[in-house]
Image 1 (tube, rainbow, N blue to C red):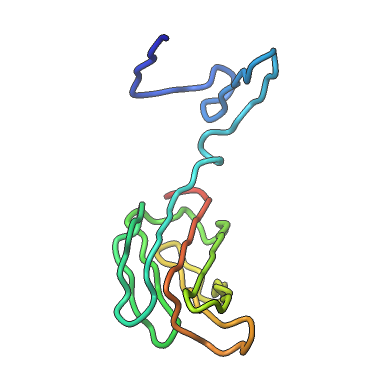
Image 2 (cartoon, rainbow, N blue to C red; image 1 turned 30 degrees about the vertical axis):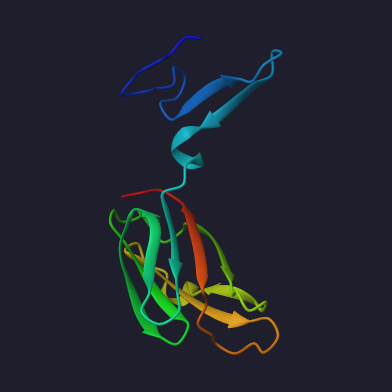
Length: 136
């Protein structure tokens, strides 16, 4: 088996795109800069928020029941990023993380959790948030 070690990859035709050959001659061009997750965070949202693991998150602020602000270590270039968020509750209820687009900033994201059954704002055991977009 061969090992390739490098500190930088750059596409020939476009700096951010690299052609990947995926076996049997299947060729796919991938935009590396656009395709990578720029921020993720998994945390416990009950009581005082506790970050279990994260990337590009400097802090997590508790804004009230079920509402948190995830602060960026490295800011986004603009507020036009894509967010995927999930929440779970161990007692069997399913929750929805609501991404607050009215407060969408390059420096932070705000989320609120509400229950499927009640629709009320609620504290949640586990939250996972992934963000794709351009960093500043």
